[in-house]
Image (cartoon, rainbow, N blue to C red; front, side):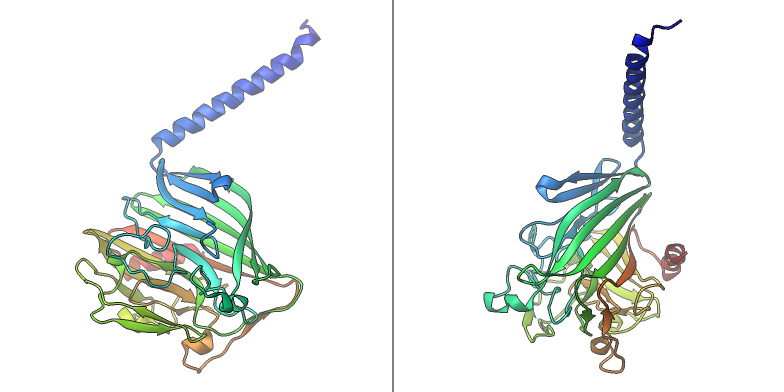
Length: 355
């Protein structure tokens, strides 16, 4: 008969051996699986890194220099960086307009009269009371795995005094396959102590600022005005190597995509000769579906389902509202494809996403 004194130590040893073996198996799997998605928090550095096969895909970051958390940078399966560097890591030859356009983000231009979209360190002190910020509160969970990983976070939408308007609970799901990366962003917004109004505004909601080479070629400088009348000059730059072009699910192309509805829009081009296709997919369960597109040739690629009056030139109006304690959920997928893609191929991804 076994001496009872040894049962607990043997059990502990067995668990330790099993845990070590499991860790070694996981490490081995990561080392041989080129599409293994690893989600690694570094909260003291204000970031969560997402790796595929040990190589960077993106990071969820909340630096003190930004007024919202963002995903930055975003890298294709072949290592092509598809997001603009400015304002976090400026690169030679790229535009330096709109300092609030960083990576991939989610916010809105008029929430109870506060502008969350345009807020940045460049805003003058006297305009601060009119701005809103999104603050990172916690990483609620991470999961790594073969071909898929996830990140769950909580954020708060606050005014300039820190008063909370909304709680945001977001799940990011990161997918990896050969030549394909995708990000599902499922965001639930809950009104807190009072009602919250998303007044119709052209600045919203999910947006990304793309690399210079993925912009549409522009032959003249332009001026853009936000809802508060602030003007941003967008200079003409050398268009060598700039080959981007938008195409929506409804067949709208180039600059004609802006201010039109569609269930998805794709942006095709190349970065230093490497073909790449980006797409943002809307979901039928989202408010305002199918979304309006706030897609600009200078590199802003955004979907805005809430700003219907601004986007339709006054033909429609929404002014979406949440009562205290009420929630709404937005679901979007961002595709990053190596190579050129056809509308039929994007449609297949869309069908899979909404299914």
